[in-house]
Length: 282
Ligand code: ATR
Figure 1: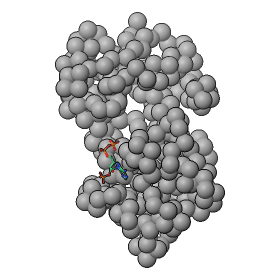
Figure 2: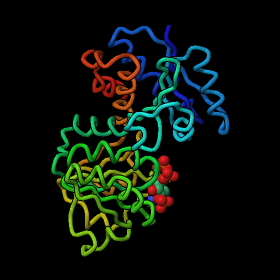
Figure 3: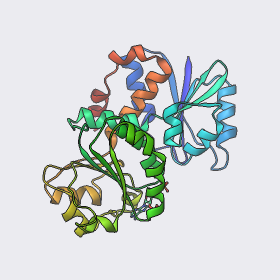
């Protein structure tokens, strides 16, 4: 039996084993998928031990995505762009690092009927979660992608890092501070899609002030929070403006689907049904 795990700390709450069991059933694949909780400073050792014992693949979550990137012998192009690894696999005796988070977000948005081509997108946050989704969002050729963060420097860095891809895809890629969003001269547009990739939701805060909310949302906006399991303060603000909202559970399922296909073969894509799995999780 091929063995896979999700590694994180903490990990007991992870839905990944359940999600992958569903995919394995749908695709009639006999696999074992478990949980691994390395010590906070022990990821590399735990991962090496897992692969040396014959483990086939690993999903990686908080706080080990940078450790996983450092561990990998080779990185896929999208993992390099994301600056982090959420999926490890063994090929020809080498450990490969991939990142399916951004592809998962894009697939969830498209499945929810969101049009990304020529759209105006606002991405809140400039940390690891934000960086992981910028490449796949740019690939969809939106009209603009504005990255807004508390501190200017990190958003500016991301704009520089993705400038070439943005130019190729003819996307206006810009940075703002969160404070700029309150000012209609500094942010003179509303957005079709606002994605919260900050860690603010974890502490029940929203990155947006009331003035920013009034400036950037319309009733036809779509607000997406990458966290799941609750209606965050950010989602509540969007609801009050009449916008549609989504949590990030669909992204979790879709990034898992992509990892499953990376491990078990892209030809299984027709046999798995991430949207049916999502319904079962809700
Ligand atoms: P992650 O991997 O989850 O992205 P991270 O790399 O530490 O974690 O990044 C956290 C992001 O959330 C950053 O953009 C951070 O903003 P700063 O760069 O200004 O620190 C943002 N963030 C965290 N708490 C926030 C809050 N209460 N309001 C607004 N932004 C917040």
